[in-house]
Image (cartoon, rainbow, N blue to C red):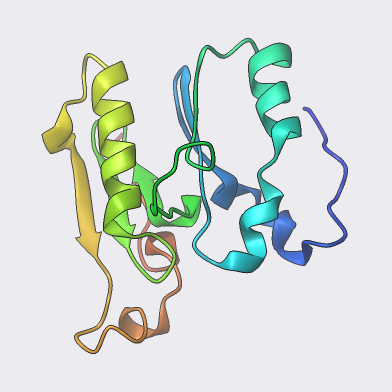
Length: 144
């Protein structure tokens, strides 16, 4: 267990799942969809992943000059498929970023295994049924 100090200026930082998507030895540090949360992902997280945990495949959406956003709460990995909710917090560019990274690094996963799940209402103003994230509406139950 590795504990990082709290970020007093980011009261939502306790929702640590939103800061990254990790599958095996590959991690994507997310650029969160709400502006107020973007300072939560900083070099201390990258340092822990690379130096303390020895991960080699660490990608940071914040380092790349893209308009992609992704909250980890919109991502559900089943062991084979990676479902990504397209919500107010995760956009199509963020989805494509995840697809590119994880399809590239996993022999058992190709681009077709990274699946977008549209969660936006027809008006585009709110997520379906007032759901903030994909995993607020669904979960994975193992078949065994």
